Amino acid sequence: RTTQTELVLAPVELHRRNIQRRLREAQLPKDGIQCTDPTAVANQLLATDTHPPTTLDRIDRLSMIRSIRSDDEVSITSPAVPAEPRTLEQIRTVIENVTGFHPERLDVLGTVGNGLTPPLDADTADLVEAATTTERLLRQRTAKTVSGVQSVRRATRRILETDGDVWKQAYPDIDRVSLVGISSVAISHIDLLHAVVASVSIPVHIHLRAGTGTYLSHRVSQLFDIANPGTVVFPS
Image (cartoon, rainbow, N blue to C red; front, side, top):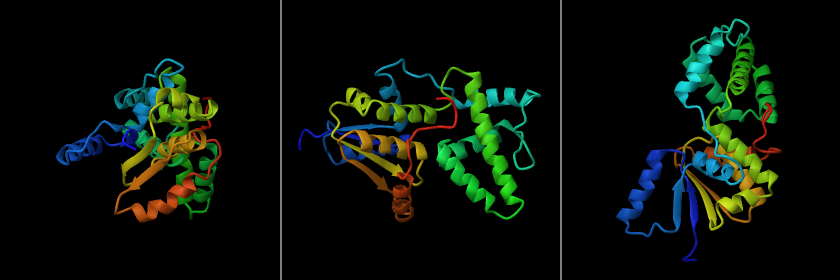
């Protein structure tokens, strides 16, 4: 339909600019496309029935992790987990992208880790524990959201809790959602789309890249096979 409006989620800013450039070069109308990123969508959704979230930036997280490390009562390092704040933040980010701190996914990761040969099994358990503890302590020390990913998870839960009403309020004119420009799949993005598919009667498309698309096309369907997307092991 000529009036169709598509919400295009491109996590990387370069991809969003490329989409706009390609449309200009092809002299195609841009009215029917809203190009944004998943975190901005999450903030828009959360702003419909509460105050927009404020989020720690990476510098703030590193400073807070440094403070956590100086607390003698807290031990989050081990031979497998260096004490350097940047490394701890990288570990937290990787485990967050893989599991979303969802209890079922953390259990799966723990099972996989237990099946590795020593000392890889213990090292894996230490890495997961370090990431989870770091996230929990960051949450305890700030009223802000720890990262944009946390906002995406909160928005995912709100879509499901309101049976899609919060989405319809924020995006009443959207006819289709597309996730584009991804060479790897962040769990939070999949869970957000999962909530939309489950609660809103609009089509959702995921556009994969040539190099990794064949593998990811099989993985994506498995990632949707989870109960209560957006759930975390912390108080939410």
